[in-house]
Length: 391
Ligand code: MN
Figure 1 (cartoon, rainbow, N blue to C red):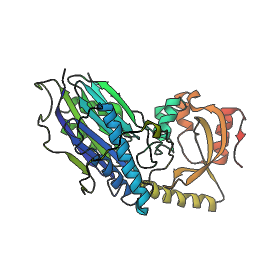
Figure 2: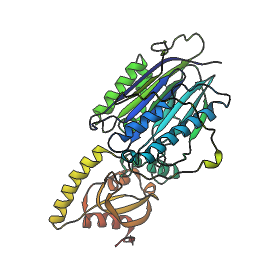
Figure 3: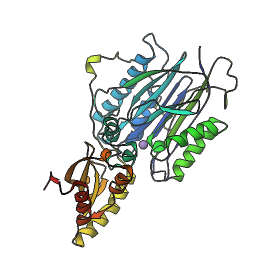
Figure 4: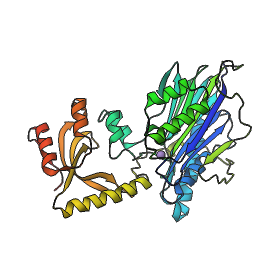
């Protein structure tokens, strides 16, 4: 059965901590996308805008929807990377990009980064994308739990983005769709602030998609709003569109929106065919340029200085990249250029997942501790079995 987009809603919000909005979104008929830009001084905004504008005028092609999305996202990557190489002020910029295309009775999702796509069907919310982030990979390896990931000090490090390398590996998947499905694409400013059951509840209970989007943004802000929040959502129904929520009118023109509302009018004209030989896996461990991180780093630096002056050093207990419980000296923060304010001191042989949840929560709270407290906790855990990895 041919499915139609019978309602959609979209919004982006700066949040409560950032001064600028470096997210962007795209809404046009069967094509929907979110991009979450990163980079200093407006560069993230530029990267996200190039990504969404690469979708302007894109229509079905003879290659099929999966190849189409892969080609468009690959082309967006090339444009962002080229500009970053050409202009010094854009060096290091990048963006996530998550695109959904409705075609026939299927929804095709193309994805790079840690924005997400979800589907709500019969009240059940299913995540359709994998987070290309350090903690996302650790969760998939079973090294840490989703709950650990939410408080992990390196949770903002993404491992794949558009713009950082000349080629990018794009995840593309086709999902069979049904009448009544609701899809939602969002930046991590939403998923970092509210739970998936809250997303499901808003989509299920609010009378319109617009109301659901407004409520989700309000909740993310109420919980802190530490990042830009962007949501694009749409509902599907069969021909006739009976019983669908919201406004059934489709937009007449593409809606490309970002914080600055500055449009360059870029279109896809000469897209090169994707050369599979140029595809390769990227492992880009760049830290996001986060104003909030700079501010917290300043606060942390002051408290660190205080601790050093006081003749004491601070420690915390966390999880290393292999999921092992680790004693760190310093405080669990990083400066935007990848400068860590902590250093691995001891790595235990105990994976965090081996601990009962209550014990795990108590140990891995990233609270600053004295060396003696931290070591005695580790010792009680490991019965004295401490391995020194750094002097
Ligand atoms: Mn973000």
